[in-house]
Length: 101
Image 1 (cartoon, rainbow, N blue to C red):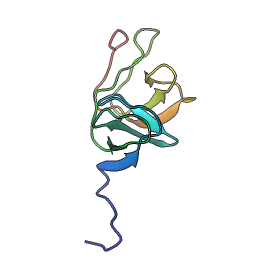
Image 2: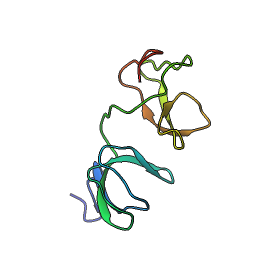
Image 3: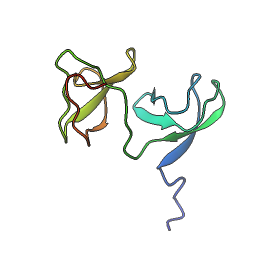
Image 4: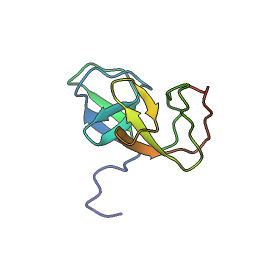
């Protein structure tokens, strides 16, 4: 292993920039992940930045995800969208129909 390796990168340790809730997606700049615990702002937390997660998506309104589609995160709404104006956070691994949430 390289002596320059700092962390494995599946879960990284960060200092929360806001209150975070375990399992609720969180974004800091271009960094996006799922916190492993609930902590108040200023406390350390493990942020899972790799893996396949079931995240909330915008239901209805013709929002459909197909396998391989890019997935975007609407920070203010707190769910995944297909709009390229939101932050790209990953790739769809399971199709989601219009009515799915």
